[in-house]
Image (cartoon, rainbow, N blue to C red; front, side, top):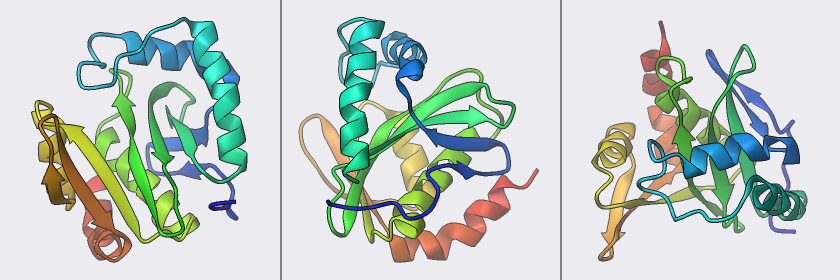
Length: 182
């Protein structure tokens, strides 16, 4: 077992809740990942809603082993508005990605969903570093990552690579939460 989440797997913020995906979320996730408005900077998706459901069932075994956590981002009224995933979990790090927010998101959803997912990785799982990769042409995400406090660590022809350490996140956390105030 790579990691084990001792705390409850759901986390709630001011406007959002992150809950682990279930096979019933397949239509929502498939819709997000195949919508041209949201998938321009993602790995290509092929297959059907049923293929997505089968993928989720396989993922649940990785979740049970503490290797990966895939979340539905929901407004507090229960309306799903995105997804985020913590994967590639090792003894001290995780990769943060598969992050999509749709038009149903509330104000400041990007900041809040990112902060909540890093609380899971750093505080609930006790990991010390998050690795993030982003397509070089995804200027909006790159600006967000830099404003959030992530540090660029390298690149390849297609991607920029960032990292966020637990100590940096904890130092930034009061400012992040101040920015979430109404």
